[in-house]
Image (tube, rainbow, N blue to C red; front, side, top):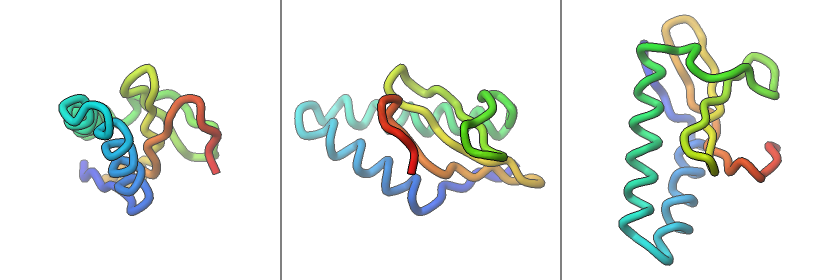
Length: 90
């Protein structure tokens, strides 16, 4: 399966990395690596996450504070957003 990060998801990652990096740059890099690691699992196990709130989406808990929102289509997984668990999707 092919894994794609949507533009919005890439921006989410960048924003999260910048926010965490203000206080602890090493933690920001570790979190970003965790996003890559967990997203990589989806290539082999595309239905690993739970059914998402939005139609035709799935959600994978990456960390107790962050989830990946993604879609599976044909042979492709698209990461749509990286959301903080307390944030409401828009």
